[in-house]
Length: 102
Image (cartoon, rainbow, N blue to C red; front, side, top):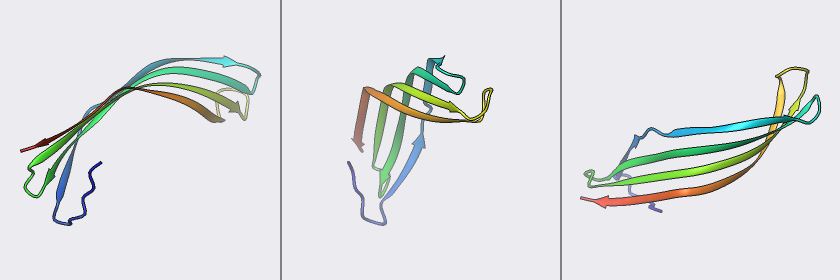
């Protein structure tokens, strides 16, 4: 982790595109309670240019598999409104941070 305390130090984030995709299935237990399980793949990253004269950069990549188990409490008949709660398992597939100095 990099901590910067000098006020003259600059960093500029450059945002990168990410990806989120997956599938899920819902099981109705009662007329007001349902369970849903999903399988998701999440890919994201960031790129920071930093320094007094932009002399370095940090690239960070994170790929995750997420398996949430959701419980849905329907307040009325039909699809909404409802209360949703979740237990989630995260599996870090890849995490990489590169510090490059110029």
